[in-house]
Amino acid sequence: MSKAGDRAEGTTQVHAGRDPAGHSGAVSIPPYRASTILFPDLDSLEARDPDYEAVRYGRTGTPTSHAFEEAMAELEGGYRAVSFGSGLQAITTALLAVLRSGDHLLMADTTYGPTRAFCQGILARMGVETSFYDPLLGAADLEALFRPNTRALFLESPGSLTFEVQDVPALAAAAKTRGCTVLMDNTWAAGVYFKPLAHGVDISLQACTKYVAGHADANLGTAICTRDAWRAVKQAAVDLGATASADDLFLGLRGLRTLSLRLARHQEAGLLLADWLAGQSEVRRVLHPARPDCPGHQIWKRDFTGASGLFTVELAPLPRPALKALVEGLRFFGMGYSWGGFESLVLPTNPRRIRTARPWAGDGTLVRFHAGLEEPADLTRDLEAGFARLREALKT
Ligand SMILES: *Cc1c(COP(=O)(O)O)cnc(C)c1O
Image (cartoon, rainbow, N blue to C red; front, side, top):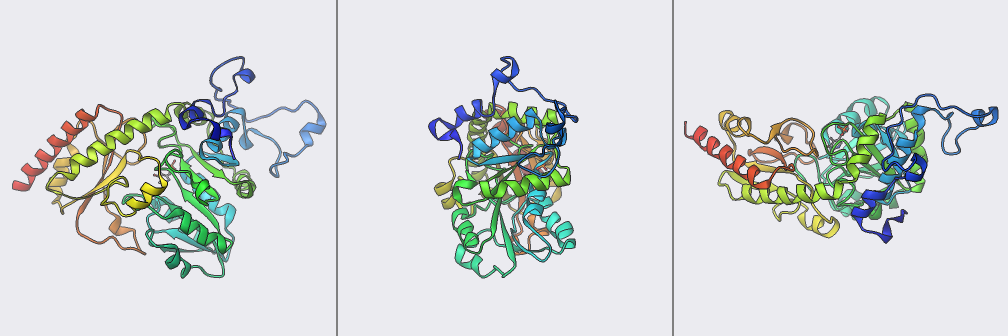
């Protein structure tokens, strides 16, 4: 485990992975742009890295990637981490590291759409069968889904779009008794508000594109691993040529330094907006893990130490003109995919099309919000105007 135990989370985020003495006193490690790595003599040229099967080369690691990986491992209490060019690449590479042809994979029905597509596409073609399971299953019900060839359990908590919070410790324990590897997408908690490895997960995956980079200007992922899981993930990254850009690694490290401050503000604004939205007559439910009407809220309270700024609101079914009136005229909420940057976002969404294990019931209109770092009062005023437009549109 990391050295993190003797200091506060925010302090770790400021200091992890830094080495001023190794960089002429510079506070931050620069983006090392390196393909060729030079060796001083023939013996070191020919030596293999003890950690993986390949020669040392820019693609397999630089001082910047090493610093980022060290910092992320420390943040989540892992043995070591592997960096990737995107969150999705971290997820797909970790799955390929664990699975082989003929295996069976259990995947939460609420997992990030492209993760699901990878299972149904490339993994299926490679002879790996995926079963999607209800994310709210208890360990006893999950038991029934294991097969002799089940090799891995994939969790994502809270789930994409609808924010179901999973009972990670119980599900992970059930998988471990079957000898399965447990992987989890921990992007929502940013590696801060939930620590998967402390709850039985072997490989914690994060799209650092989101909160860690934090400025909507980088694509970056990590897999934070236990000692047992790390080597296979690193080897798969080496074999697949997976790598993160020097600039994006640098931005990830830079983002990490202010992560706790930004998250606190995202949390505060998110809760405020969620409260305000819950009071609108068109809103049926607010799917925010910190609110009692969110499925799995009790588990969130037990296992998480905070909430980030992303949540969904279920409205009464809105005719398209009313939905357009709400989302198209907002001043501060941009419309687009991704989240975790400094800016607020709004995204109409529809899980009905994709869920199979737990079909999305109900006819409500779902809209996902990301609470950014703007002044919360400005965001509320923006929503007030949006709901006024929505009501006008409903009248006509
Ligand atoms: C965005 C996202 C990813 C993928 O991250 P990229 O860096 O965009 O590839 C994975 N999981 C979740 C939950 C996400 O929201």
